[in-house]
Image (tube, rainbow, N blue to C red):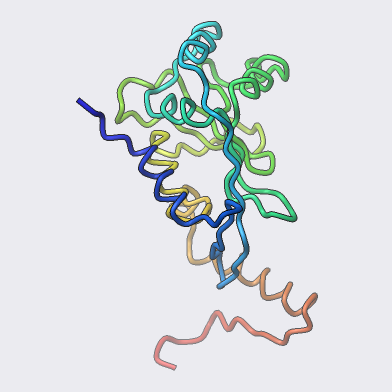
Length: 210
């Protein structure tokens, strides 16, 4: 019996949107659009992958393994000229961060890094990998694990929503208030006026009936 594989379905949907150079145009906040490039490594070998996690005494959930079997590392929403985007680590990179960079001494027991975006990190908590529906992902700004965001998702749900949201950090949205959103927008408006010679006002106090 075939298992319904959301990882493969999400990746398949993404491939349909990419051009021959693995690039697509994505929309961000305030109508900003830019090209995004995607790079996928070849898949990990099953035995090697299982031995890797066994040797580090870590648990890899089923859906994350399904990704590694297809792509042992990837870069998502990477600008073709300026870089950036989200990097999903290969097994070698996980070992480098976890062992060589000594993350094991700086993060909670059972956690391990699987990706990053400009220094911010995506972690799996092995202690919460009980079944397919478990929520085990955490996001930290750099290595500030004391203020880690509990994403309340597994890997396949996170990956699917990341692709649907065009690479936006959707897990931050639940913490966003109207006040914090418009404070961010005001900064964008100030930048437009300063660097692009615009003369734009935000008018936060504008009434709905006006």
